[in-house]
Image 1 (cartoon, rainbow, N blue to C red):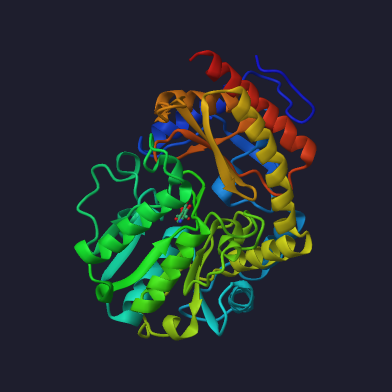
Image 2 (image 1 turned 120 degrees about the horizontal axis):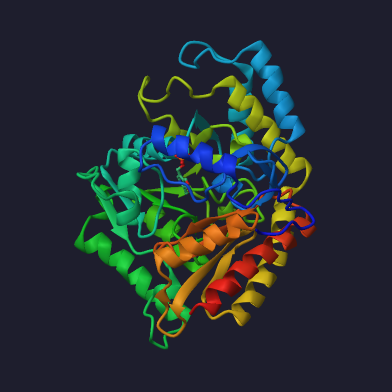
Length: 453
Ligand SMILES: Cc1ncc(COP(=O)(O)O)c(C=O)c1O
């Protein structure tokens, strides 16, 4: 049985009997295609600590896949949800207007890194936010095409699944996909021209040439409504786009009247050390998509963009039953207030430095770690079977590492185009001692996996 530590407190083996029983019910009642990265069932959580249904206390390094930057159940968010729920749970913004909805739109307009007037369209999920962004870009430009990147993840609706890359895991059996989506390589330099002695700058040049070739060989720029990019790819493996690439993309979009959409569903709300990852670049997007940590755990999302674009959609073209739900908006206002009040952006930068240093130490010790990368507290390890050839570690072996980590008391999740990475999305309110304890667990699991090579 895994052992208790200062924060991780274990009463049973993991997964415990109650977790197993609940997961058996989950599997019997839900479709097989609905995956989960651990076999743990959770009862309650606070800050970075989670209590499972057997009374074990675990550390959370998955953070609701990036939805919990402010931590689990922060008192202010809980109080706002309770207060709003007692007054009004729902009315539908297509019927009547509520103050929390308007206040959230105003707040988002005031914090997005886009100069000039902006407008915010609130939705419920990240996929919806991205889908809205594409609809707005098409309505504003009168053009059909959208360019997305290899390794991208934008959601599971038909259009966002089309924009999403990584075929076998997300797209198998679901075609035909939406038309007019074109794919460009992402500057994933660790896997560009492997085996050559090209410098990163030369590799970047190759990737950029491929982007320019796309605009000649596959689609004319005059037909492109939008380029949709994650400044730091999330599911794709926590790969920050190099600055030079983003700048060239911005210049190209400006030159051809293409709407630049940055998808910050995962990288936004303080995670990278700035409120938005795009603030690390000297680049302004036309539209930014947000979700996850906007709501402190409540389902809420937003498409925020230059007002003259946002206003191009005809009356009736936007909105849904739950757009701007007042309980979700009240939670979001408090979650954003906490990020600002507690300076969680600076905290993310600090935690990212601490964790990054530990991960680089691990890389020196264990050959199974091919790459350590990320931005701020958006960090990942990429595992390899062979450092020289960079052959990705198998999905099964990476999966086994994630299970080993979870079964020793740290909820974790993989990532990467080859599903061979481990990503870190701990709440930004985690203490340094908790962070180190969780990293100890991660390191021990990696040492065990490395020893099996
Ligand atoms: C960058 C990015 N865009 C969009 C989405 C989709 O968000 P949702 O799952 O809320 O639809 C995700 C989800 O992980 C994401 O990481």
